[in-house]
Image 1 (tube, rainbow, N blue to C red):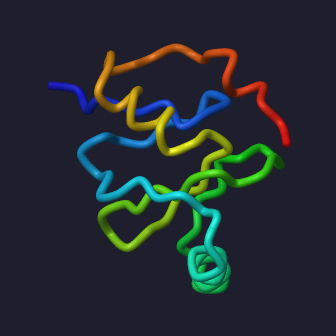
Image 2: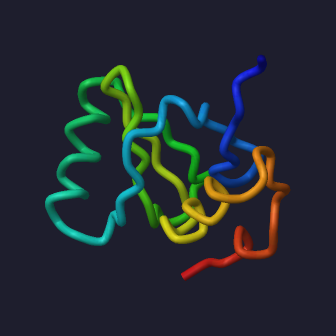
Length: 93
């Protein structure tokens, strides 16, 4: 059986079995946590230069950032295994 991937935006994917949590990146503690992961070399930036809206905690102690909201990612996680790109990725603040 092949692993099922979650589209985290802009044709970037993470393996669903490795996802621990989807968290909003709005709070100051979460932004500090991103900096700590970046310094430790454990950050996977999947934002393509856009504003980070959600954080994806992964098994193995890695953190992925996404320009999509955690609600959008949760819908994709609950929906089809390889959900296609959608218009919500064009959102910019």
